[in-house]
Image (cartoon, rainbow, N blue to C red; front, side, top):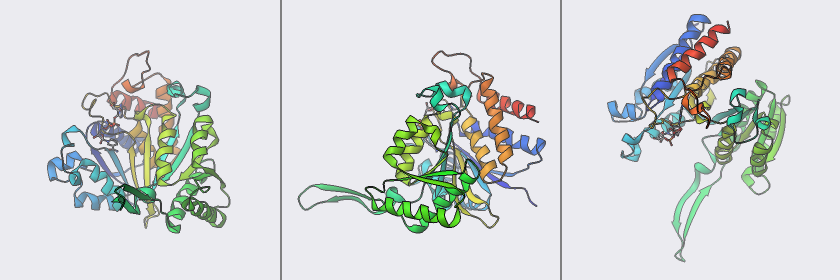
Length: 369
Ligand code: NAD
């Protein structure tokens, strides 16, 4: 059996710095756990534009389609703000998501005990929080037709976006959510506005169909999106997996993520259809951007990107126990008081560098053996 393959696209700004720490972790798994990966690296975003005049070459796109998983750092930076829209760094990222048809965006909101005081909510509401929001990523209001700004005969203008979903679009993301739930606490909350939107009625019916016919062992409940927003800040620990559409998911996943504190801690995964080898098409990336304000200074927190690799272990490579080992190592490093600058509270304190944080996590991994 050949090793699983990874394409690393570190990108711009702090992307390469945080990805260097992930590479150490990948090497650790090869050395200490006999979990070898065939790793290829390539350019994306501004870094690709500088060399090739495009934020993603066809050759890199083809590689991304072939590998078992893509790990992405971040793209963008002020240097590229003046570029034409068609070659902006973000276009590389959007092309990857579109051509790999990554329809399920997984955004965990997990609160590490050592950081519970970072939340804007009270410690007891967020300590131990571990929820997963599955956002539909390729359809709904952001893509539906008709769309546009139109002139009306009376001289006014009209802006239109269309919330549109089909049976298959709803069923496939629902299956992603149910599959995830089976690897967690086995509960799914489907979120829409079936009280006022026909697309919400269809969403509820189709998610229920998938549940009854394919996942009767998983607990399914339904909630209106406005109530879900309230519940997320009132009692977020009631949820396990939340599945929702593109627009509601955009808002609810940001809200849930911020329950846990810093941008430097938030991973994500975007998954598509299963490939022939049974693995989903997949891209893993931190939620944060290229942070040009701190790039090149060794100040970036690598944990969001390392946690994204933990998601790859769990969701692409079926290595749930190893993912947990990595998450526990991060938890113990944070519990020891080690902090990158973004994790220092208002009272300040001493911070460690990007590579020191990576090294501390490796040490904690060693201690776990
Ligand atoms: P950002 O996420 O890059 O930074 C926001 C703030 O958070 C900054 O103060 C930054 O220093 C801090 N920060 C972010 N990640 C951090 C980390 N790992 N450790 C410590 N601090 C961290 O967002 P922005 O400033 O709005 O955007 C900067 C650039 O990144 C822009 O070009 C934007 O288009 C791009 N961007 C890319 C992505 C992506 O690649 N997925 C996402 C968002 C923004």
